[in-house]
Amino acid sequence: MIQFNKVSKSYRDGTAAVDSVDLHIRKGEFFVLVGPSGCGKTTTLKMINRLIDATDGTITIGEKKISEYDIHELRWNIGYVLQQIALFPHMTIEENIAVVPELKRWSRAQIKKRVDELLTMVGLDPETYRGRKPAELSGGQQQRVGVVRALAADPDILLMDEPFSALDPVSREKIQRDIISLQQRINKTIVFVTHDMQEAFKLGDRICLMKDGRIVQIDTPEALFHRPADEFVKQFIGTANPLLKDTVTVESAVQKQSVSEKFTSSQVIAAGVPLEEAIEQLIQEDRIQVEKDGEIIGLLTRQSALAYLSEALKERREHG
Image (cartoon, rainbow, N blue to C red; front, side, top):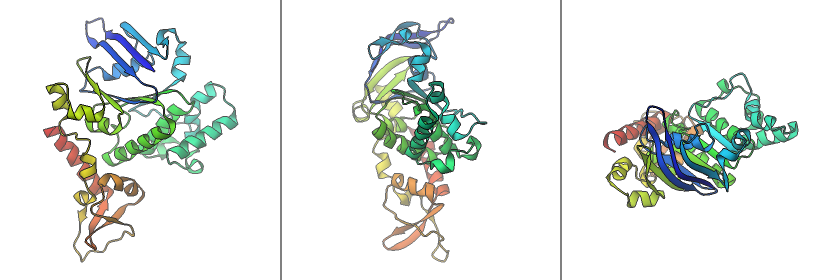
């Protein structure tokens, strides 16, 4: 689908942002570029839609070099999602999503149908959200709109440059799950940039770990974790065990309360349920009662989950 052949990007001062990269991204693959700041991952991503032009080497999509495409045709067939969501603030959500379809001269009926379809796909009721402005949405909701706007004209390829890194941990966890579910339905070729190995493990079919403009290892999450190519890979992976999310339970993030305190939630969840499974319910409810051995032991709240996840992230950065 996307082929890099000896691709390099250097600047006039001699800086080599990307150095002789060879890689093949398969059709329908969720391909993650990961690595420390300055490793070349974002430059690699931006060369796919020619936001940055390669200095040497060739990039092809299908059998055709990207330099041979009309630049507008190329970019219309590649959706692009940034960390800075960049929704047009004066436009409604519907108008934001409709930008590229309108440029491609879709009919009003086609556009309305597509907007409703996409909003429904990411759990935003079209009747409720279609006419709202971006400022009326939460950060997580805005990022969902950013994702579906990139999908509006049904592109074959979706580029995502650290799209969730500005979100709080709870919202980020939820939207990660959403994008996994979305990919299972739309089966696009997704190229995703992150500096977070945990996110890479969770999302990627394959992961490309970069350092100093070069590829260190490309592999599946399982192979990367169990068979790292060198010491750098081992150190960068750190404690980002892909099984970690299955071992953290609701009890880890419970807000303990004494038996004399009144619990106000009508929702109950078992203490042994994986925290990841509780995230979606937590987004819908302010607080959930936590039950263990037939007794309510406390509450799982958005704040308690956020505090736990933030502490876990901090510990991983310090010891990973």
